[in-house]
Image (tube, rainbow, N blue to C red; front, top):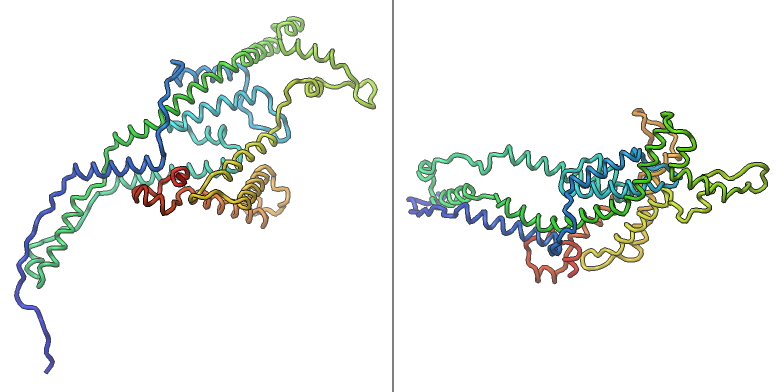
Length: 400
């Protein structure tokens, strides 16, 4: 006969309801969130006192009015063509406006892409910003539609009656009650005030810098406004040629330059330098072409990436050269018109070559590695700063 050992009887248990309050949890969540923000952003910028009283709306309206009066349409940069002085000034001012609005969260993707995206690295940062914004929208939608700590309804009296070991039911009840009182909400006003402390000094300084740039460019912009109005009146037949030439500053300067540079082309008879070529040879300042500007931007960004540290150690010389080479490859590909590809696909788009696909994959992998390197920290940092917010430490904080 086989013997079986069993449990007989009902064990007595005691139940103590959870007494955790919502206020304590909100304070704890807010404290943890503030610590993560400080670990991610580092020290707060020094307080900045504004030099001017002009608001952003006023300076934006002034810039829009002046640029429209000059006849500038914000045309895209052309390949192989030198930038004009008006194009440089317009892009500097537009960049300042859009950068301010981007930090305030009011800029559109179209303006950011048009006035702030130039290089391949800018394109990757722009794509990452759009992806993060989309994820944030999805999270807010999920949070709005979530019912919170939803849990099944339990009849504890029936479960106590049916269970042989009441201790298991008691532990289950205790955990259900703990989940019911758990709250992940935070004091959003305190977090917003902390973020304002980081953003406000930077925004105030950027606004004053934008105002100073407008003051520097005002003489040139005023000259462009006068010229645009004179050209408009001359086209309408309201000015004689003599008055147009007398009142137009550029017309007088070009006429004087033409007289001083009255030169024949080498080996040519009765063929003289045109005004554009003469201006290039005798002007004090030569404007850079689109390719030269983008090459300089690529170099500055590559140097910044190679000098940044990740995980407490700086990037090696071989990695720096590799990053620079990949950035140049992606930059060249973005400017070419797929000259090496002639095969067409069904959608009317050009198919990338094998080398272009490999270069894009390498560039994407490099961007992922650089992004991951920002959040690597050493054991000494863990011992010094603890575990809270380590995944949000910047490179400067991680190497400190």
